[in-house]
Image (tube, rainbow, N blue to C red; front, side):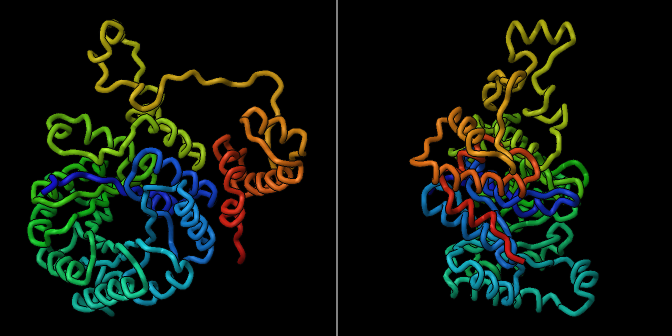
Length: 412
């Protein structure tokens, strides 16, 4: 029997984009999925299939999965654990196969959110009906979310989770919705839950007390100690509601590099940190949120030394004052900045300037007509992003114009 391992499910395109005052275009969300796939992340919670303005984007990304661009990453949607949402999800996205169904389970939420209109029994019945209907509609894998699990009575949480397992759920998502847990409390809860339910447990931790990564690791340790696989939810640069979620790169490094942990508790072998710097920088650019100077691994000071003792030690052997090498993150290449003439592709670009830009990227077109069609899409991309598109975005549009057109089409 294979030993339990830790896998990552990134929720940037679901929880990250719910961050107040922030957001991504559908093109940017698609690029996040591309970079997550390159990084080796197991799954991306890529959107809301019941939300109308997400429909074209979600269907386009499923097409990209069929074409091999978004493989082997699994694309999963998020809906409420009610039959109405299941019906709407499959009406909007007939080919969706993976989803997480979410419902609140704490007494605080049942009373304060549902205003006494639902009982504990009602919560379980709604969830079970939704899970069964999703499989009847053609789903292959359903995870069940216990929202506010950290404030849910453990006996009821086990009862809820056992009902989810019996209905066919592949995982239980333990949501520390308010960042209420600490590494000690979440270990105890997850261990007891995993021992009782005996299916993989997924950690969804918020950073309200600054412990999202620590709690995620402790929860993953508990699941594995109890004999089941662990899944950790992350977001690029830790962005998310309020104080954010567990940071993607920090979580990977914590599993791989922290004392004792990295030797015993194994991370999905597909993870390739060489792409870490790239996704962090893109996430910062797309969201318009600078990476903090002291951000682990990807901050400007993550490998900077000034103190004489530190600088001397690092120059003699980087291991003296660095826990991991910057090259492991894909850092170290010089950044080239144009200081002379520059031609860019924007919403008002003409074909000659566009040909100059694509020529440098070695993008070839069969005809001027083909080039003009891609230019038109690039113009729309600039309008939607409201900032210059990146080279990777331009190459994506050139190679996948049909999907680019679909995900950039939003009809009110």
